[in-house]
Length: 333
Image 1 (cartoon, rainbow, N blue to C red):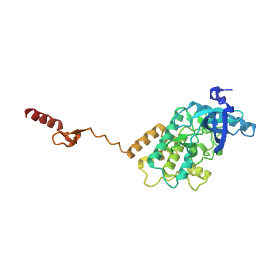
Image 2: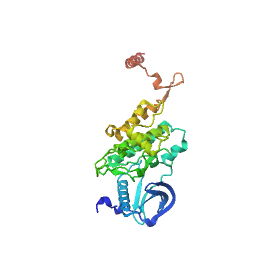
Image 3: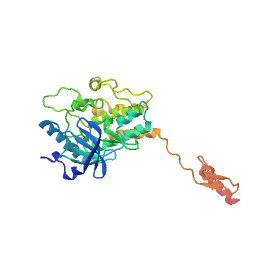
Image 4: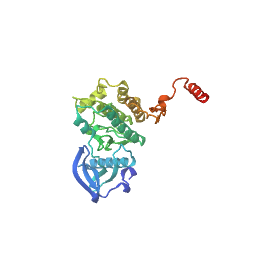
């Protein structure tokens, strides 16, 4: 058995110290509960084992892969991994974020929009998390607001759920079971004819496409491909090259960032290091520089008025020469 099929002992938690509480989430491959590990409040993901032997083997391999990937990447915008166990249940233990998912948060304030600097701050959090994954050779493949969790103060987000993540050297065709077509890059599910047994190849730019859709959501607080089913959205994106409509009045620079992320050709999409740079540059255009502190005041002893050194300093092209002449007059007098 290869190291990819096993979990290092140092990553295992003692199941006797796990206490599972109320359910806080559910996905295609498991349920998430609030709980405790010893005295620590945690999130506990219980992964489905499946009912058939071949299904059980596949799900266990996916579980081991998720644990090994989560354990090797650390970033303040990634949900912190604590540990895992395989028996009696397949469990992944992570930090518990007391906020809510980005999906629930956006829905709760709808139709109100996020304040633009906050929307861009969230976008930068997401981009930095994905940049970390890509730097470690990991493709997330399931970026969507449901997998983005807010911190308690609702000022930052963290990326969660590595259940569909893959190492870049082990890519494979996505299946319909994920139900996330609205955010998935078209090259993941388009039905381009392949020879029998041939795998569909893609790279980490699938995460960039999904990021573009999420960024659009942050700016509009609307569901992408509104009025369409998942399959209709997939068909529109893959075969009609349709994308969500950009909102009126959006800055051309910001529209460029969004649209460059979801272009059809994956090789034309920017990297996350480029996205971070572009977002930071745009954010600077929104935030005026902080005011410079005024110089300390000095008291004018001759008339009792408080004036600043700045206010009496000669200005202009020949200020230095005027200062020399003024000093000479003072000496002569």
